[in-house]
Length: 149
Figure 1 (cartoon, one colour):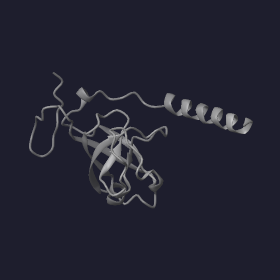
Figure 2 (cartoon, one colour):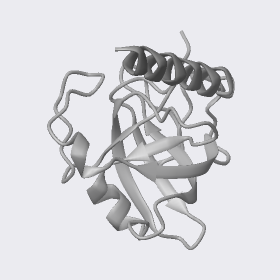
Figure 3 (tube, one colour):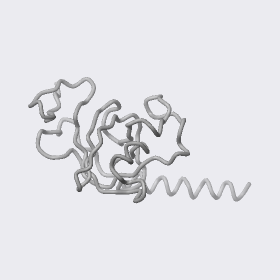
């Protein structure tokens, strides 16, 4: 029993550290037609999470094109692009990642499109394509400006 309590105390301390180290969210109203919404390391969900509930109530499906992001509204569609040009379009359906410094967690299928299954973590840029409830404005090539009214 003591070891369980000690383990829980250590786990709580570690979670507290990682949450405090998270960067401030970029306001959705700051999304513009120029450049990425965010850049940084991406990781992907392990298969052991298959079937678990995501933040929007769905069950995680490793074969789906979905992702977890800390701040973007659930249902948001984003393009995730590696420096070498490989890209995948995913829907945000969960919160995370909760590892300091990482900006997005991808489903296994999405990670495969980016060629990151062996590496595990790669640098990416996130481009917002569509946000639920926001009116799309801009050119047809995918530029997006969030309507803030």
